Amino acid sequence: MAHDELKRLLFGSDKSSDTTLMRVEVGCNNNASKVLEKAIEALTVILSVNSVCEGKEDWLTTESYEMLESWFTNNVLPDNNDDRLLDGIQNVRWFGEGRDWFWWSAQVADENTLYVYILVVGFPISGFDSLRWLLKCCGASVVEQGEAVKSSDL
Image 1: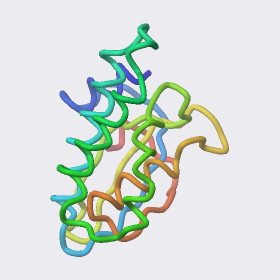
Image 2: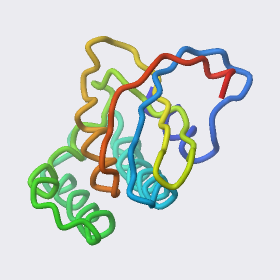
Image 3: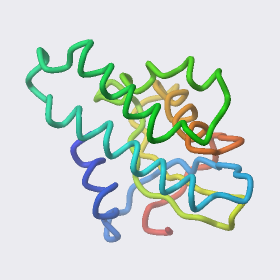
């Protein structure tokens, strides 16, 4: 699932698919395009590290996670002064296969509103707080679960 998710982040979603997704409503402060750009970059890096280490659990060491946390702090958080977000830096460790959601696509509705579409494979949604944390680190002000939508309607 995470490998397919990484491909969707890099190349876009399959437009011919008819999958039921959840729309995540993301409130932004006149910066939705920047939030989306940073979220895609951050999630791509996080998932790439997990992908490279797939099947090699001994590669996912404390040191590799600390390197990922350092990258995240320096590249995603510099514009954000909320210490509560920095306190959650270990959330970068929780984007593996154990989640119940996977990124599908996203669109900027306007500079104050971003919609992120996720594939949900379990309920209640394990790991959703990590997505909320990631989006807030990228500059979002509010992140809420929304309604179900069909991927073919996007």
